[in-house]
Image (cartoon, rainbow, N blue to C red; front, side, top):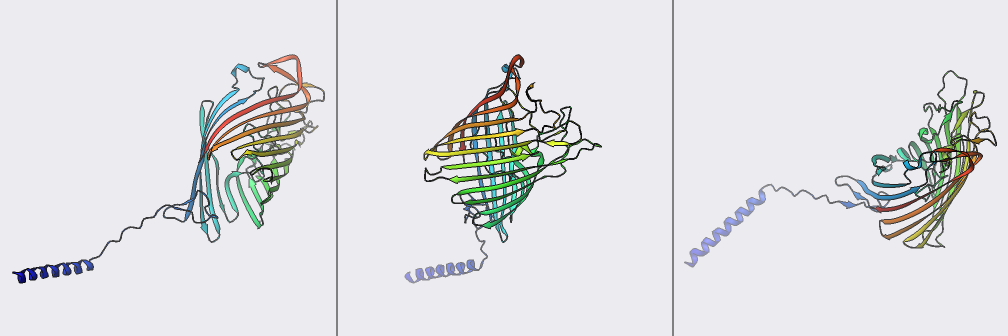
Length: 425
């Protein structure tokens, strides 16, 4: 009996061994590899917040913010006051995608930022920036390469212009933080008007883009830049012997870090001079009492040539951290606009003029902003700014859209303020 049982067990073991050997000879399907999302492996390509897109060698960062604002601004009194909104509500959602790929010729980068805004009962979504960068080349929509410091005030930062424009640029890097850029930019973003004797804007189509160049240095102490631009001032009057003009602008700025006062403290200084390209100097032309004409050029009184407007601005800002989570910005600016004396619309000295009249003027602005970051990614900010324009001639004062019979003024002002709550991610 024991012998039979042993034979049966031996046979069963043999069958199992044979079956196992046969199974080993059968093809086996390998498990599909799992491609987990990984953080970007090195800072030059990715850095903080970047991850590798599965199945590629591209690093992607997704960021953005949600912003709510509550605004106050004095309006122009030439309109009926009861139709004006001194208080406005504003909301924005912003999303950005930054994709970078390492290549043997350097980093290939593409960037997209879309802002969707809602205010005054209406909304819109716009491409704020969208550009490609590779081997020193920048193509697409990006902040103008003329810009250095855009300002620390939310309500207004006069004298400081930093628009997003369409560009084609090349940047050469020299080491030790030095770089130089040459760019062609959409000149339509920098236009005001060209006025003829009838007060009609006669700006022609864009024949030449703006040519912009800068030299920049960024080091541990801060950064600095010198910049220049050429801007075509082209009229649209055919068969008239009026030559086009070439406007221009130059500027310089410096940012100095001041950690000896407090971590994060900094000072900004910037100066701009423009002739026929007044947008680069960014002068205000509206206060609550009146507005002032501001244009790139005019047809002269004889109707034979274009004469250009000159403008300059100086701006300064200081940032101080009272605590690691509370900081304050103080900012001021001063500038001047000089209308050519041969312009058809130049007001006669001593004349009393209506709002919107072209004339020489000076302006200044002073403002402050207080910021609090209770937790990472959430910031509460409040600012207030005062702007004043002093004109060469006295201007009729308006009340509820009605021109005063006797009251005139050669200076006007505007208060504006804003409360902002912003969540960054």
